[in-house]
Length: 175
Image 1 (spheres, rainbow, N blue to C red):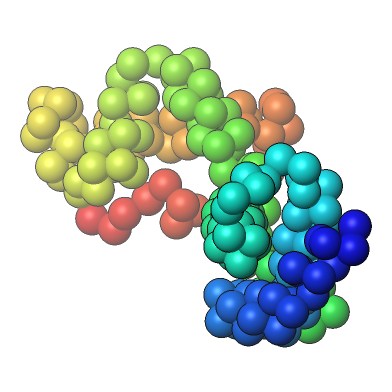
Image 2 (spheres, rainbow, N blue to C red):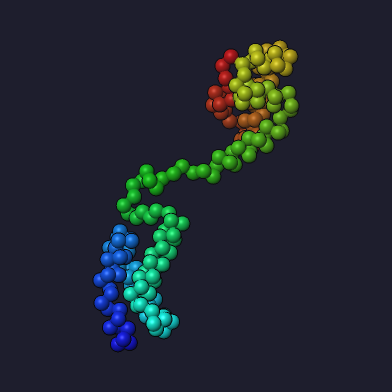
C-alpha cells in the first residue's frame, strides 16, 4: 500500500490536468480522476510489475473518458429540468395523428366505391367538381351529391355514429 501511495500520489495533478482537458468540465474531470484512482487501487495487483505506473494510470483515465463520452453521445444532451424553459420541454402530442389516420382509412373503406372515388378525387387529388365529372363521366350534380353523401357518412363514421358538423373546408376545394 505504501508503494502504491508513493507511486500514484505524485501523478494526481497530471491526471487532473489531462482529465480537465478531456472533459472540459471541472466536476466531470474530478469524477473521472476519482474513478481512475478507484480502478487503479482495485486492480493494482494486475498491473505489470515492470511497466510504467504513469502510462498505466493515463491509459485507465483515457479509457474511462472515452467510455463516458460514448455513453453521453448515446444518451444525448442533458439539460437540467430546472434551467429549461417551457418551450423546450413542451411538445405537441404525437399519439393521436396515426390513430386518426387509421380511423379515416377504415371509414373510407366503408364508403361505397362511387362515393369514395368522388371524395378522394376532390379531397386528396384536389380536382375541381368539373374535372371529377369529366373523369368519372357523370354529371356535375351527381358529383356534388355523391360528395355530400360521402362526407356525411365519413363524419358519422369518425364520430361513432353521432353526427357532429365538422369544418366544411376540411374535405372541400372550391371549383
